[in-house]
Amino acid sequence: MAVADGRRDGTTVTVLATTSLQDSGLFASILPKYSAASGVVVRVVALGTGRAVALAERGDADVLLVHHRPSEDKFVADGFGVKRHEIMRNDFVLVGPKADPAGIRGTTDAAAAFARIAAAAAPFCSRGDRSGTHLAELALWQTAGSGAPSTAAGWYRELGAGMGATLTLASGIGAYTLVDRGTWISFAAKGDLELLVEGDPRLANPYAAILVSKARHPQVNDVQGQAFIDWLKSAEGQKAIADFRIGGRQPFTPCATP
Amino acid sequence: MSPLVEALWQAAALILHADSDLAEIVGLSLAVSLGATALAALVGMPIGAMAALFRFPGRRALVVLLDALMGLPPVVAGLFVYLILSRSGPLGFLGLLYSPLAMVIAQFILILPIVAALSRQVVEDHWREYEEQLRSLGAGPGRALPTLLWDGRFSLFTVVLAGFGRAIAEVGAVMIVGGNIAHVTRTMTTTIALEVNKGQLALAMALGIILIALAVSVNGSVHAAKHVAQRWGGQ
Image (cartoon, rainbow over all chains, first blue to last red; front, top):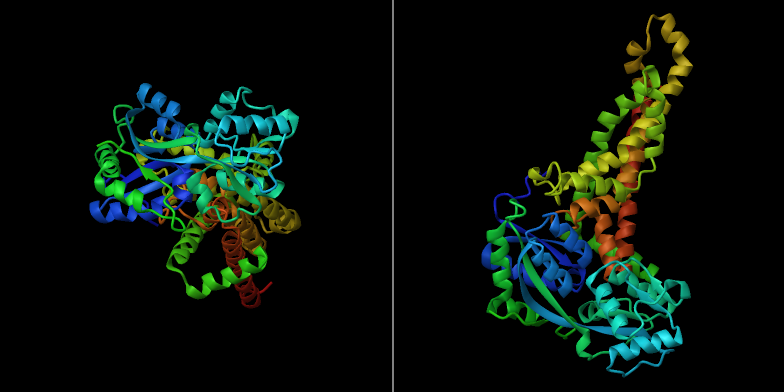
């Protein structure tokens, strides 16, 4: 069995990344291009943003690639990361049952939609796992003026689950949920769920890459880690992201500033 | 088409096309779980036999501990190994996290109690049955140990299979220490979890069917070997 996994010879770089980038198929599309150009193998461990950040703080990756600005800024401010580089963005969308019991279809005000769901006490599935999507959802409840609803009321359910499991459950019980567009487009078992609210600027979802600090964790492969981030920001990397399609649609918009 | 019927078709299609990615995943699953099972048998059987035959301080506590740890949640075993192998952990300098070896270690810890506890029971039963006879031949527990292990070998097959079954089926431990990295640490169970998360339910179920078929064929081969051994080796 291959014991030496090549991590120490500098030819691989380990990335702790948020699940949407893997589950949507983005990595499967762009990483072979990077490997072909650089000869470096990128190993992706996909986890919710909260867990990815916690593991990166322990030094268990060379690069962190997640989507929650406050967590990213704190990661850098606390000295775990070198610098935040915004790479791409997409947006969150609010999906729910076709019947739309809270009557939010067509609204472009996400906070108002959340308030209507709460007023109607319509079933809502929350990731509840400190992922980037969960944290974005909590911020939206704040904006809606109510704060995170109590699970005691019954209509608000905290699942502690990944996006796919949450969508599957929401589809099963006819609940609303917040999802990033990439995962939504690529998710295969939508069932009765429909996209109901999109387009609010507050639904913006930027993804950023951060090199884990070698000063904190001497084992970090900083040379290859930074090279990978540089490639993501380069014209070539940005084009690879822009070229990625799911069912003819472009889920991620490159937005790096060189 | 209902997802279950679709899953059956997809399973058949996956096997017929002999997809190289699938072969890689199946190979890694088998290598990791068989490796962990072999290690657990090597270490667990002697521990179990000793707990059955010898009286030493703390023996009763050891027996209770082994029995209790048979129910060790895979996530806990995985978390334990993760904390040790993490770059911030005591063995972080080895760089083993997210490697197949880390998965072997986690599954070894998971199934060691199962193999040790069940071996203890097998050896103890045989010892109870033959103690008088063995003692009359001048064999105390120490000298009886190899005899008892040999005598109980067919029951111990089942013990090892119980360990293997637990290892090949678990997802919590390998997910944490392996990271489900494509082409490196992606096993049958982590692939199934990933496909469920993508909403590819039929594909996930198809992989589940292949996993079950795999477990059946491993168990079948062991039983066939046991049958042949019983016929030629007496008993």
